[in-house]
Image (cartoon, rainbow, N blue to C red; front, side, top):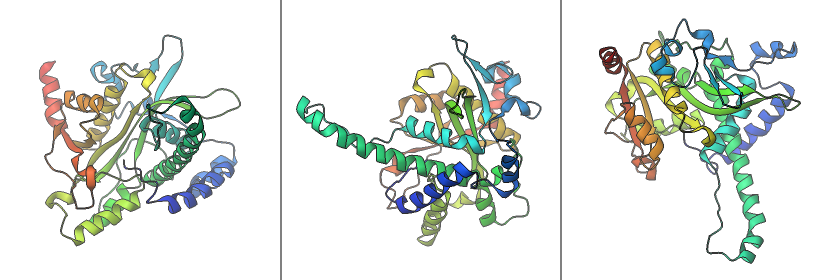
Amino acid sequence: MKIHPVAVLMVTLAASFSQVEGFASGNHFGSSRYSALQSSLVLRLVPISNFRDQLTFLSDPDSRLCFSETGKFSREDGHEFELCLAEEADLPDVSKFIVESFGVDVVTISQDSTSLERLIMKPAVELVNGYSGLIAFAEVLAGLRQRMELRLQSTMDTSAPNLDGLSREEKIQISSKTSLVLVLARMRNGEHSGIDVIASVELRLEPCDAKIPFSLPWLDLIERHIASQVGLTPKNEHDLMPYLSSLCVDERYRGQKIGRALVRCVEDIATHWSFSRLYLHVDSDNIAAYELYKSERYTDVGRRWNPFWAGSAAKIGYFVKNLDDFAKAAKMER
């Protein structure tokens, strides 16, 4: 997911201010949902265990790893988190978690600075970074709402988007609004309602053109259109395949196989959608993520999205996993 605050500043600020105001009043929800909120039914976390009849993830100890059969992750101190699908009211907390996980500091103070220089510069640096964080939060929140728009207008479940009988353009538009966002979270107690998130991942359908998605899907439509006009569209761009993105785990909970379990859960959902491949992007400089995907048998497609304006993004790896081959290998190992 690409976050470009400068490129979308005006659009994001306008959208975010109206959305924040709407969130406080309830007006940002789809019309089919607004009446539910008016009757005090707040739409929040949907446990993945609700769909255990459709998925095999929770019934397979080798897949769920650190999760219980009911999708719970328990800490030694007794606190418990549950694997769920994110709902409308969860998105601000999910956005905040994603921004904090990826980091948005645009200015840092040199370690060579004197104590006096650091003291003088610190307030200005904190102000700039705080403003950047606000813009990033607004963009991520707006992007999540746009990418989940159609799911937020109906009952939240793990089903695949219905693309039957649609043109290619229509399929891409529908797919860009039907993301699934899985979170490992718990309801927050006390007067500050909301959720505490310690991990998240997103699954949606994307064209197989190696393009790194923007946070705001309409920017992807524009970039793909420009690429097609200058003859940069790959031959298999018509394929829409499951795409994994935004895998985040709170640094306090890393090393407990949460990320690996989330990847396997997404793979199970993609298989349930009747697809045999799952794609993702990973930067080789992100050693932990790179090693995770390699150990889970993802392989480099060998293709990059590299139009002349792509810059350093053209170096980010585009990986795929053949889910059918992995399923056969798993059965042989057993």
